[in-house]
Image (tube, rainbow, N blue to C red; front, side):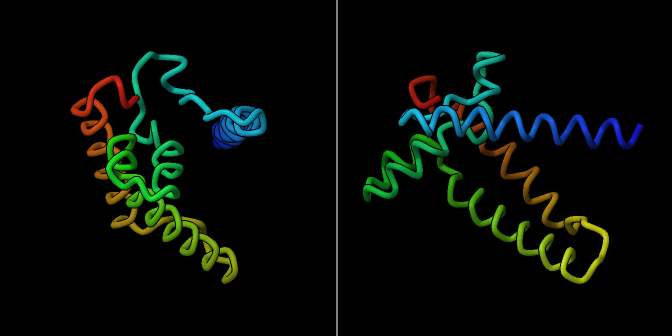
Length: 122
């Protein structure tokens, strides 16, 4: 069962990467896969548009597209650093509970923010 779950997660992740690569390769902003399937935004919807606006110096637009983009980037970088250190030391790959809770809290807050900002920013 564990191998099945691991392979399903890997397959979903690879599909997600291909989905985004195809859209970005075509010079378009990739639509949220979750939103394309369900019609609702996911907490990270607008993250790419937020980064593009931030790169242009448009902080207000960046925050409207996704107010937690910088939080997600910092959490991702920190999580990646922890996992790479564990991999280097040949330890079991696992995030500390505080990081997992930070992810959960930021994603819940991000989802609430998406609904509060309105559909025009999904």
